[in-house]
Image 1 (cartoon, rainbow, N blue to C red):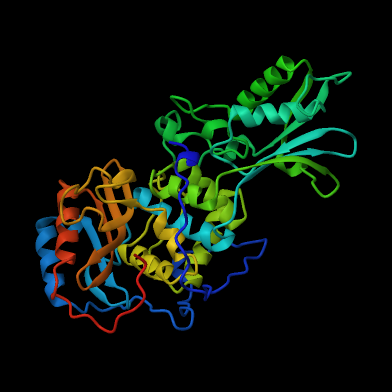
Image 2 (image 1 turned 180 degrees about the vertical axis):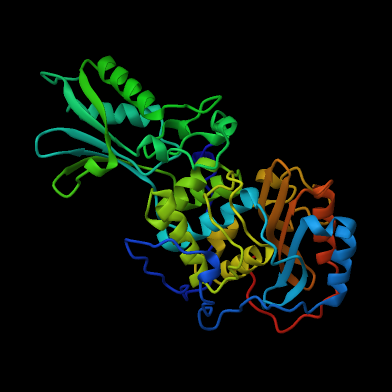
Length: 431
């Protein structure tokens, strides 16, 4: 499903205080998570507590995981930051697509809800045309046709150029197309398509397009020829894109940030989440992007011990997170100025996205929204749960569980039981 099929009205915003700003220098040094100082949360916002405060729920969740406790990490918190229950919450595990909760939070915070990915056509002083992009996952052939018409200078009529039009496609080097930890077999699948700035249909058809710049070069050339012109098209590295002295001729914009976030969180689209990490951190150098992501997380006052951001989608098994980190992140995003945009991008139990077939017709139907994650041996689900006593932020990550879905469902049901954890003063809720 493409982002254009996911556009929905954004919910109204309810909070106006921004999160703590983070100015990232252009040269970010390599730094381990354990070396980050504990940053205070923004003034007035709840921070996840470290001690379990609801023994009744703690006992029930321990009973649910039973003999498999060693392969589970579970954290449950309320809207005030109380840690209601926690099993191995500080143990870092592979999160699979729960990693997208981090990428989308960074992108929303740094870029805002009105941001759109843009593909542009430029004319250099010597007359050479350049096409630059930001990884729009829905760039399609119709848009490529418009670029061809403008490149020929026809304004929509047949081409009238006297000679071949010189066009440069500005792209990342091939060594950056995939995160290094992605398995070679995954790279052939549509979900493991290469991450490039100019990406027709997310670089995937039935399978991944192995050389997307070459495909775009071929299709653009064919379109220009169909329109009666000719072109000399070549690929150039992104370091040659000099827009300071160029003239902008045309741009194609992606769907809104809501559509992009929904692709990543509702449909778990790997390509989109990788692009959001790069654009949100301001770097398509993945090594630098993940360092900036770690700095952003630390600046929010989140528990960073054992955490390692390796990619934006969770397909890389080198990612490591804790359930406490994800719970604290959701608690923080619930207080964000764009909180409603964040939650509106999630799958909904029994109704939408990767959660649509889970718990339909049960007490959880429509009452849990969040992000799923699945790769071999890994099952994770994190999100916000409506409970009679108020919302619960729940993160569950298993690496090696036998029947993870049944365990996850039971943990959610136990977290909804009224009266187990006496409520404190009410606070603003995101749902």
